Length: 273
Image (cartoon, rainbow, N blue to C red; front, top):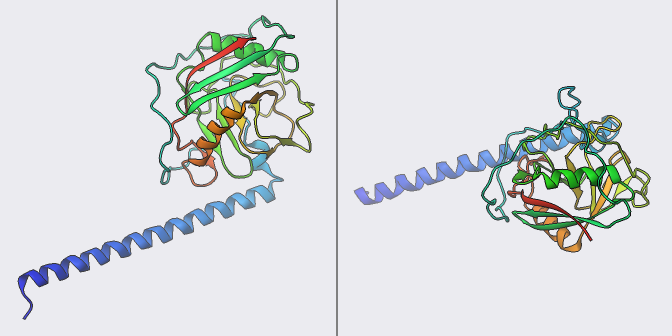
């Protein structure tokens, strides 16, 4: 005769087995769903002539915001552990201006952009002589505290390998209200339509001279058409920070979404040396 205690244990085991079966089935469905997403992405890549790569850094061509950007809004999946610290106290100041700031930098001088992020400091050697409008704009915006407390809203891990930042709204639709001209598109570093690891370049709407404040940092060689102004190079120490962010992945599982890491620019500073 089965005792009450034995019966209780048997029921507990059966309940546990049912839970395990449900979890196994959920994981199987998740794998199938992710495989379908990956397959669809592959079809888009092939069928659109690498549309994913060529359009991944373009902005929303909305006339009300000349430098707004398209950012995926897929539902998040499981996240890797966050390797970054909590953001510094403070809030984004959402500022806009009607026109590009007047040229104030010395084109022959050496400038460095420092991004103090929650994941570590990223130093960027700026190309003032090759991209003066871009560097001048960054100098202006950093001085105004425009980038401070803003999130890096996008990470791509499939086809192209970049971290995208520079939007105070954190949505991929924000900008400073003005646009700047394309520059330095024949830079020697852009060989065979490859933006090499360490390159910092401007995002745009896909139209000529439509850059604003959003930019991307390349953490692994990425094939892109030479349509995005390259204006800086990340230091070796900064590349280690980018790798840490990239290793944490993005939140869609499809290779394009918000970083799992909490990447916030606590402070952006441009200095002349």
